[in-house]
Length: 300
Image (tube, rainbow, N blue to C red; front, side):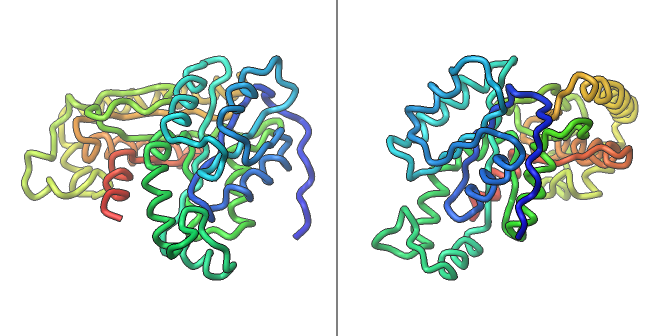
């Protein structure tokens, strides 16, 4: 495969991306893609060195750092502390790119390459994959961008990374619309957040309790609240007014959050509706449902 032309017209040299995820999910491919996009890319560095790199002086290029469980002195708590500390810097926030993949596909990838899993030297790859995913679960919830590589080829993954992190002039803003549960706290990295707990709660309807806001029945129930139409219209209009302004400012990523009590019905409904409206307007939109992802991971 030919290497893509390196893009040299960097939109913001202060962009800093931490790339992680389970072994075999595509971290190395993502790091190489970022390097081709003009990032200063460093993979497999000791965790203790990460703050020094992030604290370095004025940047000449955007930076991408690859971290996995094999890094010397790796710890989940240490990585979370780094993410929370540098992610809170509003002038140069640290963004987390998490490469995810279905366990069965990871097992197949290790079988095809005949590589040992780094966390299962004397066990089966499946044992190591389960152990590593448990270790990384708290990091996954802090991801700003999550790319599931289950059905992606290396070429597809490179294209996905370029969509999110390409730095060419005039590139469209990437918009992430996210739902969350206030019981677990607001996700880090949101640029704008809305509380939807004032809307009628489908949880109290027994026929809807087990469903989510991705279901049309739930969406219709939430939308039947007399306050919904005006609320949604104003949020949509506000968003559509702000996004072009952020494009002019050179911002490459914008995250919008909707929260409700359980993160299952009302917030998910608003995310689905707003993402659809923005996509119809031509914006590049991705969806994240933090609580639904957490529950799905717990069942796996």
